[in-house]
Structures are given as C-alpha cells and as structure tokens.
Length: 166
Image (cartoon, rainbow, N blue to C red):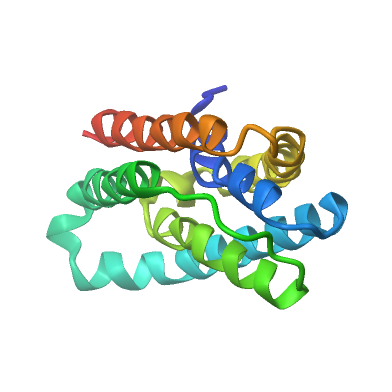
C-alpha cells in the first residue's frame, strides 16, 4: 500500500487549521462543513479529469507536476502574506472561507494521481479535515505562529508531490 493517497489528502486539508482559527462556530459543525466542501470540490475535479485528459492527451504526463507546482506556489504565497483578521461568526462566512481554502481540492481532483486512488484520498480527506479544524481551534491563541509554518508545510507537500509525479 502506498502512502501517496494520504499525502494527497493531507496536502489539501492542512489549511483547515486556518478555518479552525478563523471562526467562532462549533468546531464540529465547521469540521463537517469543511470536509463536505473539500469532498465536493475534489469530486468535481475528478469529474473533469477525463475531459481534460481527452482534450490534452499529450500533456497528461505533465498535468500533475504542473498543477502541484501551481498549488505549491499559491500555498507559499498565502503563507508569506497571511495576516490574522477578525473572527468569522456566521455560517455563510465560514463556508465562504472554507470554499476558497478548499479550492486546491478541485485542482487536485484533476490529477491522475487522485483518479487512481480516489477511495483512499476520500478517506484521507474525511479523516484529516476534522483533525486540522480541531488543531486550528486548539492553537487559536498562537495565530500566525502556527499558520505560517503550516502554510510552508503545505507548499512543501505540493512541491514534493510535483517532484514525485515526474
């Protein structure tokens, strides 16, 4: 058994620490909502993966490394520019934040690596998403001292996945 599917799931759910820190809603409610949003975007991505593969058959080999590099750059940029703001107290605000932070799951779903391991990646998202929300809530007093290193770790995971996909 390969750990690649769990690393893929870890790479897209690690930003749930930010969600856990940014909202005042119940961590349980946020964890369920965040996992549902991550899974929805992941499934949309996997739905479009065959279409993209048919449109660009010669570029499929480079699709995963390219998308992982883009996600790594975005994660690194987010970590560098992260600023703690006001707490979000509404369900709609928390859902919006979760959607934007989970958008990498959509891109991840486009990669052949996810299509080949969809069951394990789904299991990993369901497992890790709540864990990171609760970690975020537990470290809320530390703020950027926790979220910046986690952002760097997320970027590192994406860059490692890009190298692995080559």
